[in-house]
Image (tube, rainbow, N blue to C red; front, top):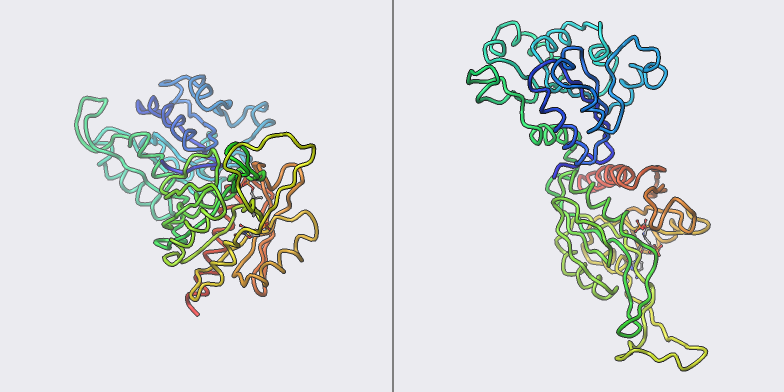
Length: 402
Ligand code: PMT
C-alpha cells in the first residue's frame, strides 16, 4: 500500500463527469495516511455536491476566492502554503488551459499560482478534446514548468466514445502521488533494524520488560523502505502492523534478538538499533510458576548481550546507528555511547518525559556523528524517522565514497 502518512494533499476538483470518482480518491488518499483538503470549481459543483467531499474528507470544502469567512479560516494563501502537493483530479481541458495560461480568477487557479508545492494534474476529457492541438500545447507548457501529468487512461468514455482521456483510477492516482514523495535515497541498500522492547521471562507467566511500543523503530523501517531500501525489521513484542515492503522477524528475548540480528548483520549495509533491549535477564528462569510464599523475593539478574556493540565490533561492520534513551545529560551520555561502542551515528532522545520517547506518537532526536550533529523534531515519529533516514543516507553514501 502507498505511504502518504502525514502528507498534506490539496485536491482540486474541476467540472468533469469524472468528478464523481474524486470522492473515492479522497477516501483512498486518507486510507494511505494523507490529510486531504478539497477545493471545488463552480463547474465541479454541477456534478457533485460539496457535502459529499466534506463527508469523505472530514473537512470543509473550499470553493470561493472572495468568501470573507473562508478567508478568515483558511484563505487561499494559507491553503497554497499548507499543501505538500496540489492535485487537480479531474483536470478538464478548460482547467489545463487556465493553469497553463496563469489565470487566477477563481480559488483553484489562484492556489495553483500561489503554491510552491508540486502541482499534478489528472486529465479527464473526451478523446477528441484530449488529442486537440490546443490541449496538447497546454500540456507541453505545463510539463515544461515541472507539472506532473498523471494519465489519462484509455477505454470507454462517459460520452459513449472509446479512446484516451479517462481519468486514472483512484488507486492509480494514490500510487502516483506517493511516487512524488519517495526519494530513492537508499535504493537497493540493505538495512537491518531492531525495534520494540525485549521480554525476559521470570517464570512461565511473568517477565521483565520496558515501555517501548516499537513505534519509533517501525517508523524508521517504514521510512527506510520508502527510500528504496531492502529492510529487515527484528521486532520485540509489539502490536504494530508491519510497514509495507518490510521483512519482519518477531523475537521475544534479547538473546533471540541477538541471534536474529547476527544471522542477518553480515548482509546488512546499514544497521539501526532502535530497540529498547532489556539490559538484564534472569540468571535462572523458573520452570514453574513462582509461589508468593515469601514477603520479599530476590531475583538474580545477569547482563544481556550488547547487540549494538556486537554488530559495531564485527570485522566489517555495517554503517551502524545506535539510539540513546536518556533522562539527563542527554548529549554527553549519547556521545559517550557513540564513542564507546564505535558507532557511525547515534540518535539520542529524552525518555521519562510526557509526549516524547517511549510509547509517545511524537519524538525529538539529537543526532550525533564524528564532527557533526543535527536536531530533528519534535514531530510525529514517522516524520522524524524520514529525517533520520535522510541523514543516515547522506553519511552512509559519504562513507561508501571514501
Ligand atoms: O518504541 P517506542 O515506544 O517508540 O520508543 C522509542 C525508544 C525511546 C525506545 C527509542 O527511541 C530509543 O531510544 N531506543 C533505544 C532505547 C535504549 O535501549 O537505549 P539505551 O541508551 O539503553 O541503549 C543504547 C543503544 O544500545 C540502543 O541503540 C539499544 O538498542 C542498544 N542496546 C542496548 C542494550 C543491549 N543489550 N543491546 C543493545 O543493542
